[in-house]
Image (cartoon, rainbow, N blue to C red; front, side, top):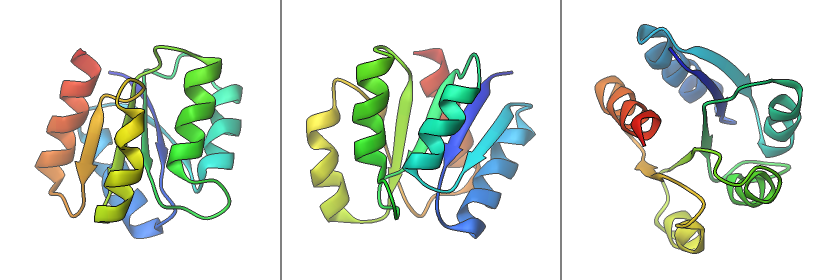
Length: 120
C-alpha cells in the first residue's frame, strides 16, 4: 500500500483513477490542479507517488513537477495526458519523472503503470 497524490482537474477522470488506485489498497489524496497539488503535498507526509495530469487550470502538471523536483529531488512523479502537444512539452522533464501515461487508458493499464512506478 502506498500514499498517492492524484492531481487531475477532470472530476470523472479523477474519480476513475482514484477508484483504480483504491482497488490496490493505496491511500489516495486528491487535488484539482497543480497549485492545490503542491498544497496537498506540503500538508501530507510520506507521499510515495505523485500522479498528475499535465493540462490543468491555475497551475499545470509541468509547473507543479518542476516545483516538486526543486523542493523534493527524487520524488516519484508520473504524468498523464491525452494531448500530443503536452507530451512534447513534458520531454524536458525526463530526469524528473518516471514516465508519461497516455489517455485514454483502462483501469488495468493505470493500475499497472502505477505499480511499475512504485517499484522504481
